[in-house]
Image (cartoon, rainbow, N blue to C red; front, top):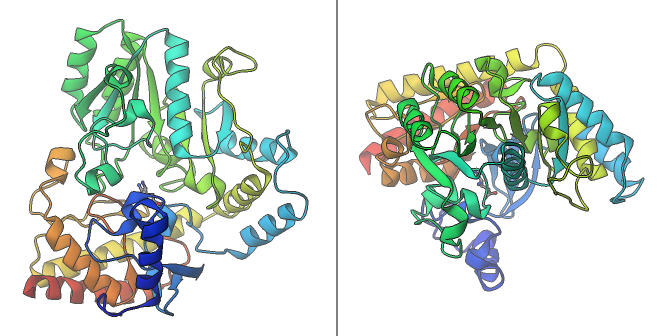
Length: 433
Ligand code: HOZ
């Protein structure tokens, strides 16, 4: 599957570039972070993606997280088909919205009420509007390298595609819109405290990825999230966890359950829609009561709570709530991580492998990565070579150093072993080139 051969993917990409900016509908998938051109996906089943040229790949992107059960999981497919036979969209309430709301509220104790939207971007944008409405304050704190979607106020020192392309903060975002967005280094609790001392009555909220998964994968250091919780409580600001990636992935109760911290508001996406377009924000009842129509904070959407997306979300969470699922996922993740660690050691490669639950990444650098500055020290050229060696062996990784890999329940022992063998070969090749 040489990238130089004229494949069907190449032909489609050439056409796409005439039709869509960069040939894609979301920048990272254009492969600019690794060079070359993207493979076009034909279909997916279980642990595998199949491209339009007939190649098969073990998928560690999983639509950036949601396909935790594997692709086209039978009960999820059945639920979506059944729902579609009853109509696609009503713009009116349905029972399915109650059902999914119950499931999220039961699984995530900090969430007492929830509002479904269509994407993570909508969720974070709305949660921040709500935090500002609730506190009557304007300033927000975010962390450099964290990515919370592409709303204007959050495109400050953003990770994900912005990091992958090495872009400055986006043109088209008026300074007025971001002047109240204060950016601090991830894991820098002292920096956050300093901002609170400078603006004790002005901070509406801190928004944070409790595990930062848009600059590779950066774990919170001991005490960091606790300090954010303490500072927000002390200064009357809200703590918002962006669990679009970690929610229902690193545990049924997300990062907040794993780390035992109760945020005021949480943003969800990905898994709660089972791969269909869904986001949500939820949290304390007294705060959520400010959302229209019960309160004055306005936010709306015709496709919010869409019946097909609700059906996919319910079916996915039904599977995840079965006993032992997260233990199984942890086991698979541990087996894979141990194998990759061995491969790194045996090949003598300077690679870091942060992991939490079924999320991991490989940083091509010697020193630990704790924030955006250290993440950017990773050697992206080495990563790109490694990526292509993996793709050539049928392993699909995120086409960027600054994204996380995801493990699904569909990966069996043989697939995990195969992945480890491919990592070892790719690391050897990468060292040689
Ligand atoms: N921003 C997404 C990952 N963090 C990538 C979205 C996509 O390209 O589909």
